[in-house]
Length: 259
Ligand code: ADP
Image (cartoon, rainbow, N blue to C red; front, side, top):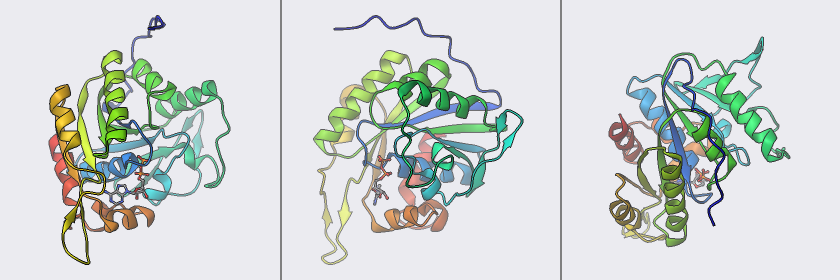
């Protein structure tokens, strides 16, 4: 069954923003927000002007991961974004209390997404990363239809169940005519601090094989590391907190592949 899609409006370029890049995943919990925040800080570290729009409307985690709090202020009918670690940030999470759910129906969410894109004073940016909610729903479709998206990065763990959904995401972007910049394998390995051996709790290599099969670039592997989780929980992504560490290296490599 293929419903006839509504004729899409011509995607609009955001004034002042050179490239909009979507960060997506099929499933929640695979590390999409962790990749988004670290990639944003790494791109900023390479000298680019970077914005991050947290469009993960049901679980906006960027304020916590980037150590941002307080309400963005309004200027006329525009909104002033906040800034930390060299990145300009806007999140729906900044509009509600941390424990407060957004009990909104689809049209309200789509309205909020469009406001965050168009009414936020992003300034001049080389790249605006958009941390999408997981899956292939309204937010993803609205973003691709209404905004000129340069490409999408798909994050997955090596686990089959995550990869199945990642493939669906790739299929959706293809149908929307959005270029796929590549697939990232997160939580690909784990080095035990007791025995020193490398383990693969979610399997290994599945994303690379899928990328090859689907004809999309493979953008690299990011290990599961306690330091990555602790840094994000503390409000300073590992790339900001320990830029020269082994844990930060895969995020720098990802940024360099995308530049
Ligand atoms: P998503 O955005 O896909 O829902 P998150 O980025 O919120 O996923 O990650 C889910 C949890 O896993 C978070 O607690 C995060 O700190 C942790 N996490 C993500 N990637 C890694 C990693 N490579 N190493 C350690 N912890 C990670």
